[in-house]
Length: 405
Figure 1 (cartoon, rainbow, N blue to C red):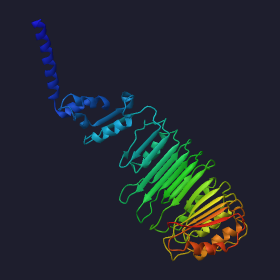
Figure 2: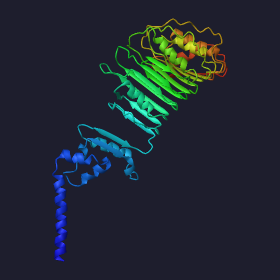
Figure 3: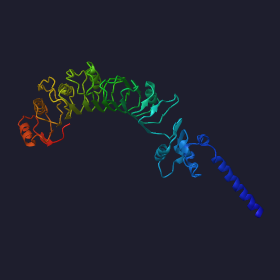
Figure 4: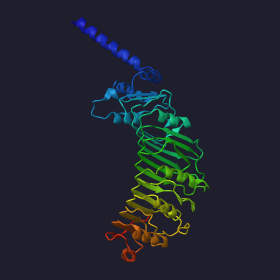
């Protein structure tokens, strides 16, 4: 018995001696050994001793496999976040994320995107790209091509002064239904880029930011909802800028719900003729400035089925008003208009004339809501507007105190 006990103690001592011998290896070698393990398993070695506690955080490789941790009370995503937060390797030479049928992916901030040719995400349905650093124009289009079944895409990109900015964006996604593009620039020199979009079954489109050269390669026959907001304050005026704006507006003519702000460029001389009818349009949210009232009027002419019109006033320069012909009352306003809201009414002459036009021409108007600032008297405004003739005998006129934009 004593002999057996001696053998057992000897094996135990040999085990701990081997363990200690492994622990005495330099960090670089231990990290190299751990790099052959999936990160999920490398983390487990932290319980061996204080010597091993943080070694896994120095491994220049992350190989995360969610299949090995499914069934736990903590979500795989939370575990991944924890791993990334604790990882301290100065250089990450390899990052592998194995996920069972991922449906959504969001990449945010200062990630340098350079994809290998074999990269594929065939099951991905939703992709968010927020301020990513693209190594080349091809890196963006390659990512889109690697997600052939994508249905929802968001691209938020900032053109930064002094940086090498991507200038060509190609989106070719036959199953895409929702697309959001935010192009941001704070430079006085407008960014010069080209965006090509092939999305034949697109249903919802949102564009916000500075507009350069945007091309739809296929008619948007399935479009339901569109938000087109151009921001270009402070940018150098371009003679052809209006053409760029209206090329996009015309492409959105199949939409049922449209939010439109064509920008605040000085007295843009366009918009008197829309070559396309907005036959399906039932709701229009229009950000009106002193330089685009004529754009609104022209759009109303080609929207025969409009039911809801919402105006949000967006004035920056109070002293500027482009030439605006008063509405001629020729019966061009939609005969189906039931609701009209005006946010930011200030009793300016052209605003008064427009409201008179709506009241006179809208045959089935049910409600008209006017929002004013606290600087105006609600009772006084209501009294003045109530004096104007109305075509609709059921129209309810309301004046409210609101916040001017």
